[in-house]
Image (cartoon, rainbow, N blue to C red):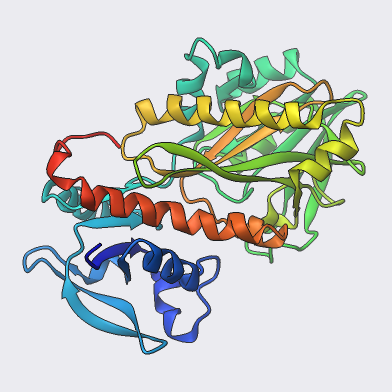
Length: 374
């Protein structure tokens, strides 16, 4: 196969740290290894360094074991690994797309309300989503009358930031939330307050006044060692364009909170070992097969409504009865949970599949309709 460039569009923070080698959750060496397998030269981009007028960009590429900045032709295929805010950035992405550059995972942050709506209207999946409303005083009062355990989360939050839990406790409501959003991921700065009904309305009204939130019925998650857990499943398109389940791992909440995200202090563990310990009377392989099938159903339903989807992380809850529930879809799956769980093969494959998809897009370019939703 002839060598071609494949762009990886990074956040400004990750891009700026390439010379130091401290690129956070992005393993450039995994990209390089995967690129070599598919005859691709990975080039690491920042949106501001792309010049659409000249069809050139300034990018980092590997040369003699080091990453150097170079002016290169604009790649015709780019994997978006950044969250781009602001109208100017969105317009530039749209202009790149209209010019013929194939950007997959064009959108990396989805509204939790939108993904809930898509799945709640799906005939086979609607009973696998918790009862959910857009946050508002009336909706909160209704949910407090119907349920004794609720989750309130930002529509656009990630890695568990901003999530709150509201539980009925005698004649009061127990509200749990993280006090300082800027504190370190593993810190224990979680606050518990016991409030009356009107106090809950006032407190949550103040917390949620600057951004959209949703309210959900709490999924009664199964517990491992007394801690709730859910399953992260990485689902990606690879060479050939078909979806494949790259791997899955269990995310187990730390002892001081209900949030299982690894970025909030949760631990990553083998799904097989976790399910075997939690469900000793179940056929674990049957549960895993159900999870695989569920992941494929979810991603196919979401891809019908969310164009250019190619690389997602799905969070799925499982109850003590073995029931499966969709929790959320992550458009920028951070992948490092595989590494933390000791699943090195899956970790490497989570980089290989996107590179395989880039190769396929390049190979099939003449056959791809301009408006193809992939």
